Image 1 (spheres, rainbow, N blue to C red):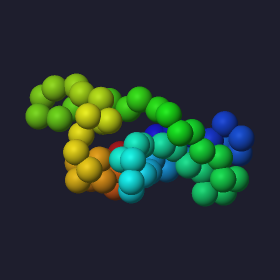
Image 2 (cartoon, rainbow, N blue to C red; image 1 turned 180 degrees about the vertical axis):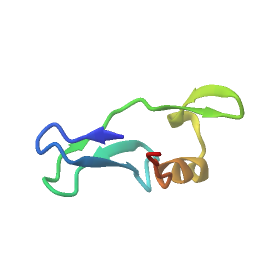
Image 3 (cartoon, rainbow, N blue to C red; image 1 turned 90 degrees about the horizontal axis):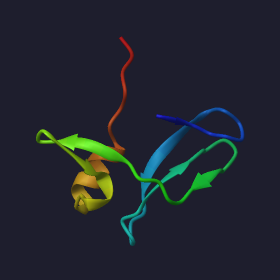
Image 4 (cartoon, rainbow, N blue to C red; image 1 turned 135 degrees about the horizontal axis):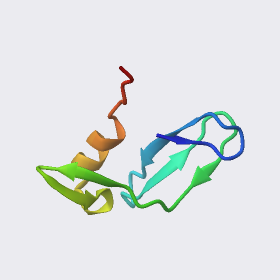
Length: 68
């Protein structure tokens, strides 16, 4: 989870349809960060999400975080 540096609200991780690049976007103030390196654990290994295929990237972008 990333907060927008301009307005402080939560930014959403998106996947570009054509280039498959991941970027952060704030829907309130329209701030975007085009380049970000995100790593995730997949089958026991840490890997950069950029190396995922399109389906796995979309699945990662749709994940929600929960606070207990």
